[in-house]
Image 1 (cartoon, helix red, strand yellow):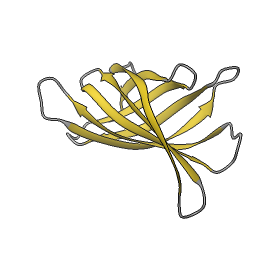
Image 2 (cartoon, helix red, strand yellow):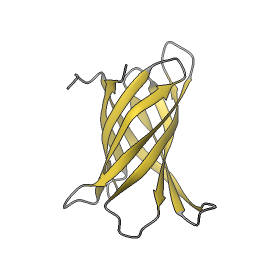
Image 3 (cartoon, helix red, strand yellow):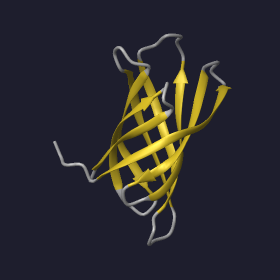
Length: 126
C-alpha cells in the first residue's frame, strides 16, 4: 500500500435530491473545506439511491480546488460507498480522481452523516 500524499477535511453545506430519468433518486451532497496541495476545495458527491436501506452502492465526485500558488483546478471520479457497521457513516473509496492539471489521485475517506463531515486521505493514483 502506498503512503498518503495528503488529507482532506470537508464539512457538509447542503443536499439536493433529484429523481433521474430511470426513476432512481440521486442524492447530491455538497461539501467544502481544505485538501493538502489543493487549498480550499468545494465539491459534490452524487449517490444514486436505487434501494431503500442499501448498505453499499456507487458514487461520484465532482469538485473545484483553489491551490495557494497556482490556478484553480477541477476534479472528477467514480467510486463506491459502504455503510460503516454500527455508525451512521459511509466509507467512500474513489480509485481515480482526475484533476484538470493532469494529477491523478486515489481518495479514501469517511462521510459521517451525523456529524456532517467528510474526511480522509489522498494517495497517488499514477
